[in-house]
Each structure stands twice: as structure tokens, then as C-alpha cells.
Length: 407
Length: 79
Ligand SMILES: Cc1ncc(COP(=O)(O)O)c(C=O)c1O
Ligand SMILES: [Zn+2]
Image (cartoon, rainbow over all chains, first blue to last red; front, side, top):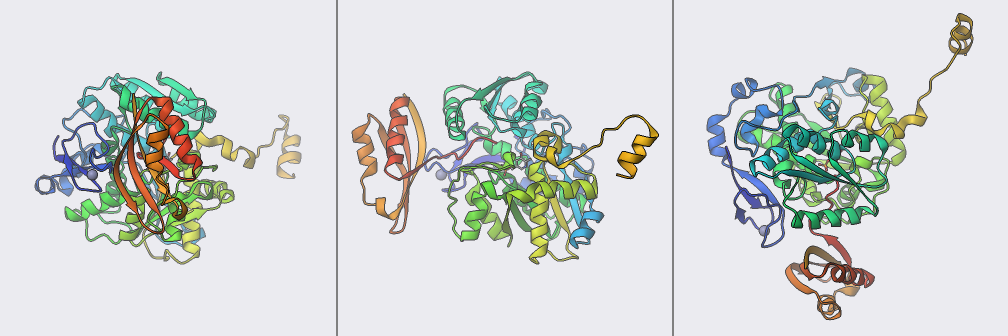
């Protein structure tokens, strides 16, 4: 393990060896990877990073893995694109889209799963597993295939076709559960205790979560080694939100970038917004909700990192925005029609959330703003099918002119 | 035997009820309290429950029927 020194309880601070563990035996608090930052600061430099691979693994010094054998599908170093059209529409001069929908399995989950599957191999697990509503399922199945591991994927029985096929194609054991979210959760927590499997978001969670830090590093590097003024992020468990912030702060502490003044803006859809509701109510305990949202990839009713997300909001002087369900599709369309990027519902939440943030004056015209697009639109065709139209005509010039040009 | 880590959240009306004790009386479950914070306005307790799986299920069902919220400590694991 290059620079990761321990697992540390986020509640009581007790330290554990870097084993496949996720909760503190003493207080049940979540464990997080701790690093030897002094050693890292002696080793790392902008130059060293720039000479690394054009993937998330250019930041390997800040990831909790041992050797040079990452399970890698060429994830990360995705485009950070200036968005002049959408910027003009919203009144922002420096709007950027971090397009993480172009990862190998079309979502940012490849970042976390690349780290989790690498760790799983280090610990000599033979089986990779997860409970998922879609994006994680496909990513875990693909990485298991690449690593030559078995995969068990647990999904709710009513999942969309595209996500089921998108995971099944890699040949995992795909198990659809008859029951509620609670039932799937419950089952997987039990299985994780019973079987010697690497559940990426249970016993691998401390390592898994670190993968999302690269979304902070990349944006800072791509902006010419500086943090943006604003990050707009979609949240489910809240993990990615906290890790983008952690990534920026680590870069600051290592003096790779100047002081960070980034405001972290969380976005959630109204049908499942437990963290944003806690923020609005001004409380630090997140009340679990029963999700009922078009943004299924964000539909976590009892978010594991809810409390820590609220802390990130506080530390970064950020906020949380609840996007009405009927604005999600509009956000997807706005991004597609203005910038040529087709995102899934989570991205619709981000773009409509961004619009609301600008409207209420939280973001100024001249501030560098980054909207995180974390998933691909082709996975949630159901959400937008009814909003697009095409015309079918006979193959004649006259029907073209009558039914298309002069229609 | 199964083990389950859970968080109970109490509303003010329920804080005075000895629910955890009752749980251990009504069902053959070992209740191991690992952390708690009980104040006037609200309270929570972290517990590890140990017993047969269906006994734990029934026990949790009963606790929920008293109005106490029961969550798994890990939060949702579906992502
Ligand atoms: C596309 C997409 N964006 C964002 C998220 C939210 O991630 P997190 O659980 O880290 O908040 C998820 C998954 O849960 C996702 O699939
Ligand atoms: Zn602890």
C-alpha cells in the first residue's frame, strides 16, 4: 500500500489496519482511508501527475492501492468542456461540463469500482458483488469480467431494461429481488457478513469511495491547476459529493493548487431528497425517505454519507437544491440541445439545479462553474422517450416538402 | 444465528418507553447497545441484534409498530 496508512473511524478516530472493513467495531462509525501526506508531498508534483497515464490512475499516489496492477478499463480523465451555449442561456461566462458519461460503462461509477476491484484482487477475493439500481451494476460486472473474477449483482426486480441488459452482457450472476429497496439492502448486508465476497459498496466501501476524489483532481488539473468557484453535483448516498471536496482540499494541502474557495452545491430530485431536505430544515440528522423519483440512479432514501455531505456543505459554504420532478427532463433537454451532450436523469437534476442556483443569485456571471455530468442518457431512454419526435414519410420529394418543410 | 446492526430513532413520546428491554423480553434476541444519545426532544440508539433471522425480523417489525424508526446502520447499500 503505497501511501495509505490506515483506516480511521470518522466518528471516534480509532484506527484499523487497511483490511476489508467498513465500520468501526467499537462505535459502528464509517471508516475512511488515512494517508501519510508527508510522504505523499515528498513524492508528488504536477509534473509527475502530468507524466502519468491519461486515466484516473495518474493520481495513483492519492489512491489506496498497492502495486501497479490496477483493474483498469481506461477510466477517467474525461473531458472538461467549456459550455458557451448553455452558459449564454443561463448568464454564465465560465461554465464547464465535466462529462463523466463517457467512461467505459458510461457513468462515474467506473472510478469507484476501478479502485474497489483493484483492492478486491489485492485481498485475493474471487468474487465481486454489489447491490445496485443500475450504473453500479454495469460497472461492477464489467470490472469483474476484466479482472477475471466472478460477479454477483443484486438488483430490484423492477429495474429498467437498459440497465439490466447493460449489466447482464458482461456475464455476472444477476439476481433480481422480489421486494422493496429495504429488502435488497437487508439481504446484501447479510450476505456480506456470510460470504467471502468483495461487496464494492459494503466491505470495500472505504476504498471504493476514494475513487471519486479523482473527479476533484481532474477538474482542478484541467482548469490549469486551480479549483473552480462552484461545483454542481448530483447526490444519492452523498459519497461522491464529499469526495470531490476531499480531492480539492488534498490538492490544496499538497500545494498542487492555490487555496480552494469552491462552493459545493448538491442537487437532488424532489422525489428523493433526504439530504437537501435536512439542509433546508437546518438539521444535521438526515431523515430517511421512501424514494419515488424519475432520477432512479439518485434514489437512495437512507443515504450513508448524508451527515458528512451536510458537513461538506458547511465547510465549503455551499448549499443543496431540490429540483422538482417535472424539471428533470427539461434539464436533460437543455444540455442536449445546447451542448450536444446526452445525459441521464441525474444530469437533468444537475442542469435544472444549476439554473435555479443562477436564478437565485448563488452563482455570479464571472465565476468559474463546473457542472458534473455523471451518467449517460442512453441508459434512461424511458425518461425522455415521450418528449422526442420524428416524422415518417414516403421516399418522395413531394412528401418531404409537404410533411417536413411545409408542415 | 444472525447479527444485524441497527439504529433506532425515538420521538419525544417514545423516549420513556423501555423498548429495547421489551424487545429482548418478547423475542429471543440479544440486544447489545453500542451507542446512544437520548435527549428531551429526540433520541437514537445504535444496537447489534443477535438471534435467529426470523426472530430478528419479527422483533424489528414489532419495534416499528411502536412508532420507532429502525434503519440499518450502513445506510442504503443500493447504488
Ligand atoms: C449517474 C449517477 N450520478 C450520481 C450518483 C450519486 O452518487 P453518490 O451515491 O456518491 O452520491 C449516482 C449513483 O448513485 C449515479 O449513478
Ligand atoms: Zn469508531
